[in-house]
Image (cartoon, rainbow, N blue to C red):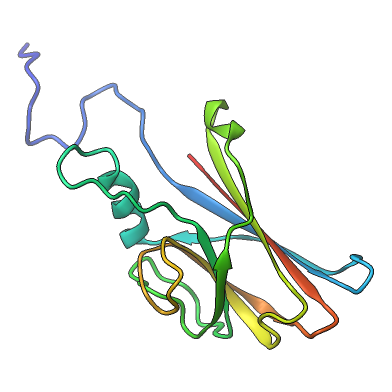
Length: 167
């Protein structure tokens, strides 16, 4: 039996390890007294360009260097696709305010980002969210995209978003 590595084979027989990114958004609309008015937990699409960007961080020639530090919300409810480069109709993008990185030593490892849209931000009917590596609206690189049943955000509400990605 020939035990040499075959380069035309997509996997080595018996090896079952793989690297897959899965994401989940938790979105809470909070009232004036910080009470939860509406809550959503939604699995998302980690888009192709986002997966490619993450994988480029491990190469030694021209690795990606700008981290994902922004969360955007928008008004579109058109379902996300792996080919998405931007959200359907972006309303606002803000900086991620906190990270939970202690999960990187967990099994499976995870990374979590959190932010809150203030009472004077993104006051419209929202139906989508995304994670980005730049502050400029409607530009790439997007890591993930999710749509959900609409949430009506007004000046009496804040919107808290937590995004967790894991293997």
